[in-house]
Image (tube, rainbow, N blue to C red; front, side):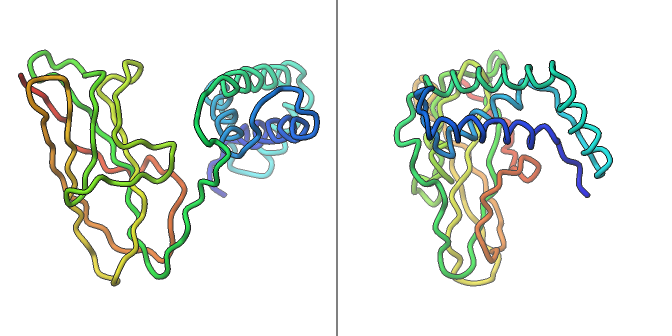
Amino acid sequence: MKIHNLLEDIVSRKVDELFGDEQITQSLGICTCDQCRLDVICYALNRLSPRYIVSGRGASHIEAEFNDDYQNVTDIASVVNEGINKVRHLKRPACSADRRIEQPPGPVYNFPSITGKIFDGDTFEPLSHVLLHLYCDDVPVEMMNSNWTNPYEISPNTPGTFSFWPKPVAAQSQEEKKFSFEIRIDSGKDAPHSHFFTIHLRPDNQIKEVFELITAYKVDDIYIFD
């Protein structure tokens, strides 16, 4: 058995219960699509202490702990309700749209997420309000889904940090292929900058839709000079 955060199951059940009631009563005035459901679950899990298990005995112990401890139940309900209020005020277009990717015939190249940091070359401070465009072979790269954006604007909340997750592409053969990427950086200075890198991939038989940070491709730190 792999290590598992049992709180994921407990929170998911609570959110599913609330969203199921909302579909009937419409008392909360929120969207109940899968994306909004996942947003609420992520919000709650990021604010609750994880409870990891590696055995059935551990699962039974934590389940009993949460069922018997009123405070634990109350804490989860409170954080889930906070998440619902946050998601209710999001203005995201077409949040109910189906985000599943249609599997092309044959093998595909699954890209890892692409992450990196960008700094001011003079002060070594991480940059914010920088717009980054990801290209492959001089063509803008389509992202995995609408939760990932290209271009990507670096927020002051996560200074210097950027991330992309390219959408898989069909493979014409079973051979390894080199993909040449370019990040075009608009930092508000005199002229845009570019950073180049390559990723070598072997095709897979099916699309991988589960995000894995451990497999992310780390771009070398980027420094922008006047």
